[in-house]
Length: 327
Image 1 (tube, rainbow, N blue to C red):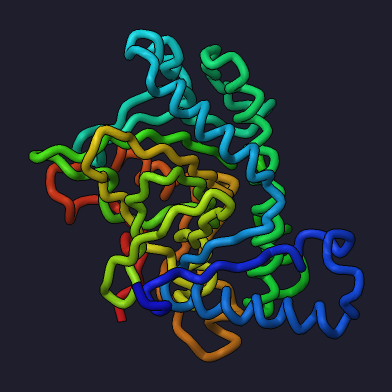
Image 2: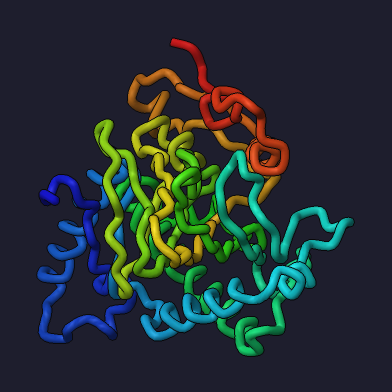
């Protein structure tokens, strides 16, 4: 695989904490490192919306432990896992469920921010799974705030603009996924799509199968136990009026007896927020808006319906083009 067929890997350490950076570096050296990192991120987000990060603040041992516990949980008998299914009256489906086969061949465990108004349903087997899930969630929330600040700088937005726009963290959620291995008759893991939120973070095991679309070609994202995958979502694409791209990606199931395990953390947006192209990317530079505005929870509901009641024809799935303004 050539270098152009890889997604860039970013060392995030210069942005995590000045106390963790080599103290021998002066401010000019540190600024130069940050500038180079932002150039790489800006290019990746402008072209296809995908990159990987290392030295991101999430302990690698914790990531490995979470994936190990995921395997133990999803290896449980179905009747055991079904004990942790969403409550029928729950407004959002926290807990264990299986995907509709029209969407993909996987099982999932969904959780929201610990102690939020959304009730989480945690498995009690393995017994330490709940604590690890909450710890991973907490770390990824912090990583999200770091990446959000970096993107804010890359886009030359006013200081803390994205943070203040996206202040309510109670809408974040995380999904633990277990994909069935491919068979001779079925190889669909998760169909091609873009994420509806702001930023997504993915931890994956060594099975592989995640692919990103770059310049019309599907590029495999090579598993690495120390890295976290970052992809830009629809909200950022709309706010930037297509300057940054919502990453098109999929999961292709692998042949063999092993399932693919991953965690996808969705750095989300408050449901009542209004989303439309910002003036910095329209009026201020003489560009017409490419999207009409919308309330985020309305779009989220349409995207959720794709999963719960998928249409029979792929072209009928709702995505961000639903809000396109014709040229």
